[in-house]
Image (tube, rainbow, N blue to C red; front, side):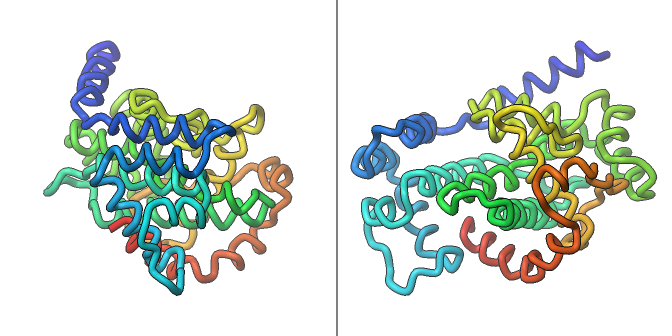
Length: 283
């Protein structure tokens, strides 16, 4: 059964639209400290659709510029290489992740939750002192954290229905329910998707370790931040997503990030406005 399940998951992932070769080049160039704004601009311009999306996104209310940014080069210079990388990556991933219509997972609520976790991850990154230039990376990490749920919904619809039925009682964590009914969790499937799309380790940690955050390793902070963001958005009941038992965040995580729960929730007071901006940003 397990071998058959893994084979089905693998085949389903291989059928998913691949990420554009240009986006892989964008990430590569952005991560090279010797790269210039001109170099990144030239790479993105290899994909006219992506170029148009990036310019549209940087002119959204999310960034709030008073004057229109008319060129890609201007956007890269003003926002910086790392931010533009994450804008482009967000655009491509959201375009590739589609919740199948007329299934048990509500696509509207799924994206509301995902944007909520994205916005909260960026806020938390600021609270723990992450450089402003790097906070968009946490936004992306939060945005994609549940991509494994989409594959479960689209491919294993009967199992997804059972998972959500059990989860609605809120007696068990969603990952425990998934493991029992399906044999794999959305985190495990998410990691497989992320590896197929050649995600960086930071994003893989967010996708694969947001229910049981790790505290050791270079990318552990992404796991901890997205875990906190996911916990917060579920607690605030931002959407009607069925999420099972909300697992408490271990005290060690609060201590390591030097945060208190009350402080965090106060900082997320205007999160609904941020979610609206983020959704318009990626429409």
